Amino acid sequence: MTSQSGLDGVLAPILTPFRDDLTPDPVRFVALARILMDQGLGLAPFGTTSEGNSLGVDEKIVLLDALVEAGLDPGRMMPGTGCCALSDSVRLSAQAVKRGCGGVLMLPPFYYKTVSEDGLFRSFAETIERVGDSRLRVYLYHFPQQSQIPITLDLIERLLAAYPGIVVGVKDSSGDLANMEAMCRRFPGFKVFAGTERLILPVMRAGGAGCISANANIHGAAMLDLVRRWRQPEAEALQKGLEGFRAVMEGVPLIAALKAITARRLGDDCWRRVRPPLTDLPVGKDAELVGRLQAAGVAA
Image 1 (tube, rainbow, N blue to C red):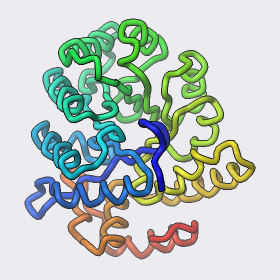
Image 2 (image 1 turned 90 degrees about the vertical axis):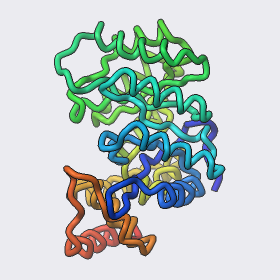
Image 3 (image 1 turned 90 degrees about the horizontal axis):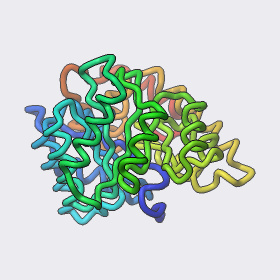
């Protein structure tokens, strides 16, 4: 299955495997990345689903380097590089550019709340200026439920004016379709990725670029199929199928559940591990989840 060009299409926020001592396992990480990319998916490592904010900067760099050194296409990678510390965001973003990544996914600094638009603009601007590389492509990460720091349309407008060709898109995980449609209308050519497969079809119809969803780790091929066929008569049925799948996954602790399904598929219980403060999915919950997924037409 061939991939979309550049970073359009569907990107998987790839799960991060941990060894017994809870250190990241680059070998397993690369193996899963290869499976996902062979399906035609791009990768968005170190986001929420990757337990990215439970990983140190050095750990992320080791994992990113492992992907590239394994021969996987960095042009189809959008690693998460937005951190609370400016120096961390700069270091990760610069490494992503050095490694040839197609873009970086940048959370705003999320510890301080009720920060001003000027403060957020300065944070993104300082990161971009300090990286100082025209190859940098920034995708903003709008996830207000988690970060408590929204990225407004006015902020996007300021960043696009100041950094044309560098600030190029957004992942909107708010679930607010009206906001995604407004971004598509207001900023032609700005790449808007839905953060949920529930909204692939309406976002594509509004002019969006695709989807970056946690569930692409286990059902990404179906999402990519809809992105490719969103203009076809069968698109509504494809979207409805994804909504049924999403409903199953919304009823479980998502990261632990995705890891449990991945462990079953790969025959490797090491995949079940999450880093504290998250907890592993209880083994007894597996059968229930598998049954619900199979009822939704998804092999588990």
